[in-house]
Every structure is written in C-alpha cells, then in structure tokens.
Length: 296
Image (tube, rainbow, N blue to C red; front, side, top):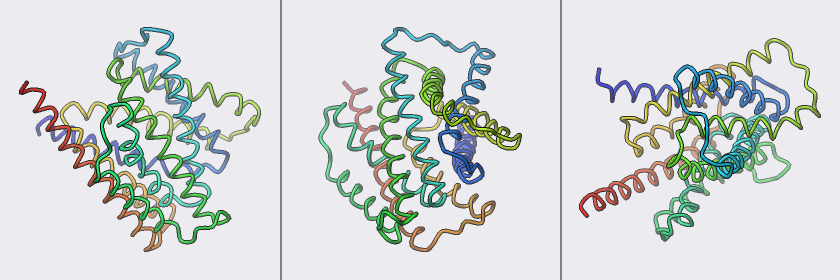
C-alpha cells in the first residue's frame, strides 16, 4: 500500500472520529462549558506528552504571537461551546449540518485578508447554503428547539471560520502542533473561572468520557488529521472533511437512535452540495495560481 493510500485512510478515519465527537453533546448532559473545558484540558495534557516524546518545539517567537494565538483559542472555546449547545438543545443532525456552513463564511472572510474580490459563485453558494439551513429548520420560531439548535450551529460555523482564517495565517509561522496546543491552553484558561463558579461534581463515568473526548477525539484525531495531509491534496481533504456530518448522523442513528427527518436530510444535502462545489472551485483556482507562480 502506498503512503498516499495510507494517508487517505488516516484522513477518513480522522474525519470519522471528528464526527463521532458530536455524540458527547448527548452522552454528557451537563453544561457545554464543562464539556469544552474537559475536552481542552485533557487535550492539552495529551499534546504536551506527545510533543515531549516526539521532541516538537514548544516556544513561540514573541509575546505578541502568544497573545494572537491565545485570542484565537478564545474563539476556539466559543466555537465548541456553541457546537455542543446546538447538540443539546436540538439534535446531532441539526448541529453538524448547520455547523457545516463554516466554509461559506470563510469564503467571504478571506478576501479581506487576500484583497481579492468576492466571485459570483461565492454569492450563489452562500444563497444555496442559506436555503439548506432554512430547510433544516422545520419551523422558524425562536421558542422552537430546532430553530435554537440551528442558530447555535450557524454560530459555531461562524466562529469556526474565524479559526480557519486565523490559523491559515498562523500556520505560515508555526507548526500545527504548537498552534493547537496553545489554542487549547487558552480555551481552558478562559473557561476556568466559569468552571470554578459552577463547581461541578462529576462521577467516574463522566470523567472518563471527558478524558476520552479530550485525548482520543481531540488530541489524537488532530494529530492523525494533520499527519495525513503530508501527501493528500488540500482540495481532496476539504471534500473528505464534508463527510463529517454524514458520519456523525449515521453514528447518532446507531448509538442514540436519532433519526433525522426527510426535510433535515434534504436541507443537509443542499448545504453539503454547496460546500463541496465551493471547495472544488476554490481548489481549482488555487491550483491555477500555483501553476502561474511557478511559470514566472
């Protein structure tokens, strides 16, 4: 088996594990603040051990970089809070499908950093995505749990887009391991005062689930995902990542017996189609730019 095929398998497995992580929003019934803190805290411990063993670099170049990545870590905490909140007030399907809008937000954010014009296709895919979100929501009323879940899910997608754009800048200077470590540290730190105020009392089952979420479904999955990108093209990786909601919905159906409605599945199909179209288009544009630069 070639290295590229091995990395494709690793990538699919990592995306599957990312989708599996959504179940913890249902398996753990306490505040999402506690879930996110437990996830980031145990992820930090696991990543520190991994980076020590593999002799990865810890130190950043400047205090400003610590502040910059720390701020992104705060967004990281908000992202996961809104994601698990969406799952708890609605369903896994609603949460993962509305969260999947994040590449569309990225499309509109990036021009402000790259100074490029927004293309017509970007506007079209954004409108298609909005249509998909509208289909996912059975009845638009703020008192409706599914509406609340969809709004929390879109908020999760929006904050994830901030993470994506910021990390594309940070990754030019630092390794993904350094960025992930300090973002998880910042997320844990910003949540700590809330955790002290809540003063949760957890049983052994809940602690083990948080440990599993932090170590396996956060630290290990991130490392697996990052390592798979050494030979897998970014465009293909972005399309495979779109399978995360599919994996999450299937696993939720098997384990939690959550069966989404036909309307939710239809809306999800519209959202994922728009995201895949946008990913393919921007992948081709990036390839053209690289070829052009190499020819100069």
